[in-house]
Image (cartoon, rainbow, N blue to C red; front, side, top):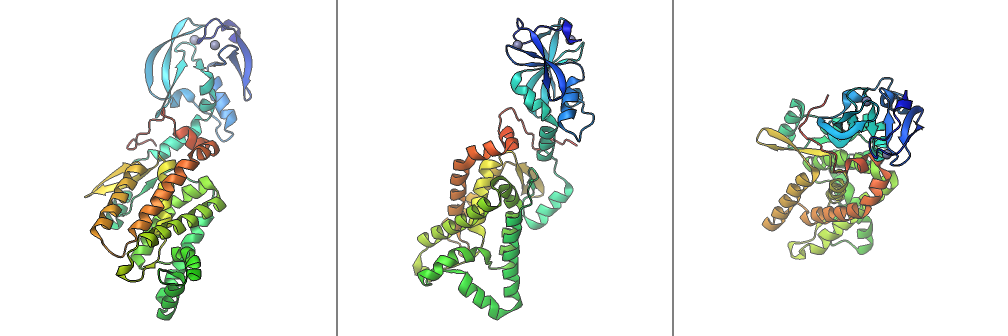
Length: 369
Ligand SMILES: [Zn+2]
Ligand SMILES: [Zn+2]
């Protein structure tokens, strides 16, 4: 029993005192506050914390063995072995090879208790590509997303998509309606100012073609759910519509009126702002790119870097029909807002905060089942 272990493997001269982690009896150092778990005690503590886990074998799910460390098990008088806490999480923990006790420094205790959640988050993020995702991207040219599953249902994202799709379908059904919808809801550079105020919002729900609609809706669905999850429904709605207004203003300001009046439609500007937010907040997510028939998972910043370069090139080439300034303006606004809110986002999302740590070594191609 713990009575034979009365010294701390870490600071060594302190006395270990009986303590509790959840309902689990442990020994804690009153100096460095590190915790000693007897054989099996860590598993018990983790199982208690997660009521849906009856048996959790921490020894089984530890990460790579690093080797023999410098700390002694004070009971067995042998050097403890160091392991990474998880497969892709390079925080080191000490295990005694003789008595199977585990020593955790104080900051590691909370993380060890959360390790099933952390492990499943890492498994989700590092899932391997499937042939289905390759076929999908090959046929559509659209990226496949690997990210955490949102906790809240993204009602606002769904509502935006429903409005965009309904308006487009309505226009397709009746040519007269189509003209009226574009006239009133599209953003016209030559419309009276009081109309333009409303059109700054309404144009975001109008689209020019099936392809335009499908591309925007796919990206809105891919990035919108996670951002809505982080921001909450109402803040997300405000950020989304506000960004769409800003993006349209960027297009209006830089538009050359000599080309004739501008008619701007589409959710692209608002969605480009979501790209900026996504890039800032979901650094461990992946989007896929395809080169010929080879598919790769890349970090969002690489994906959106290439995306913004294609916009810059398009703008320089002067290709018409695409609102490059709205895309770039929305994207930059998203990056700025994403950067400003980043500390708030980390405070309110423990999992994102944890994933932002440098000890997390995500391997994007690693398969964990
Ligand atoms: Zn100590
Ligand atoms: Zn031991």
